[in-house]
Image (tube, helix red, strand yellow):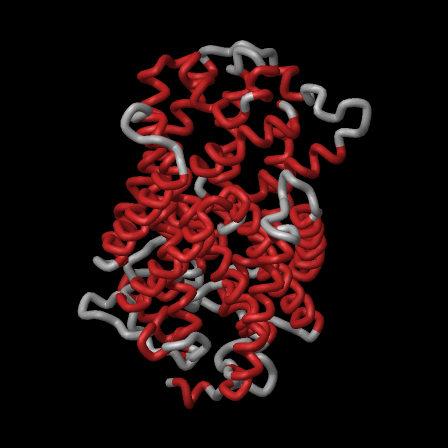
Length: 493
């Protein structure tokens, strides 16, 4: 099918949802995949998480990656089918709205939006770590520097976002491609300096003491999964994607598989190249720079960190882009304050006002900069809540006969069992992440951070819904919309 024909079909299908195509379709399957990989941030996650997982789980932590991939893949397949049915800007928010109605859509969008806003200061934290490693005498790792770097990162990212989606995609593609090359290259080089036998991968380093390895492994799972959520952001850009009923669906699965594969390979090489496992476990914060320095020399370690700067910058771009698209999709449904302003497009076709507001919101968590390492723990949990809401709505609709229309990506009879397994898995990891423990859910004040973040978001969201949004509710329209919301084909032409 020619590109123009595919774009025409995309627009025809979009109009069936009562949406007039306004955004430029400039993203393909590869760009969509790389956006979602950048959002997951393999390098960002490695610098933030790997040391901690080695500390809590010993070298055997690496087997949590294929386990998590297996169950996340089941969720990703459900997301792929939903993106094929509902290729709308805002991704998971739209899926929730069409499966569960406006109320479920609002709750899903709100929790997801809060989660990805919290990502931006975390990106600033990692950039501070990277730059302090490259320029140890000029840049210090402290809260003041972190605020400045986070502030400048958000502004620079917003300026890039204001150009065009084509430019943003190009920059992100280059950054993520370099990131994957460097992660793979670093792994290959480290495997040339192996200090440990393969059997080390099955050792725990004594973390279980005299008890079971179950508890340390649960902590590891709660930490590692933070690297493998967000693959569904490939569907967030649906209205800017060519062949929108196919490309995002494929990109969702590709992004998850790509992130898991590259993280596993890098961690595999890192563990085998540890000169001293016990020392690495005892000094988790610096285990990656120290191991690179020991095996590749200071030049190799700095080269990795410079590439990591580019990689983390791509995560910043992908994250702010996801925030903007989520806000745009929700504002178009009049669910956010100032919605009519947020949906205005500039001459270049970009929602510039939305970009500015997204950047300002991303700066709010900087007020709590001293607790950003703690706030990172809340990100995954806040994303898992929308996962649970969408899967619950999906199971309910499937039992009622959904889908009633065809889609290019479909699970058929496998759809319901995969969704059931997926919701059990999501519920399990949500409980695991929210378990009151210092490693994954510490106290920020009087209560664990996850409970505080959940309660504050839920209360504010409920107030806005009952005071304002409930009066604005309208049934979603389009193919496979909730019963009572169908529109005739004739009326949609």
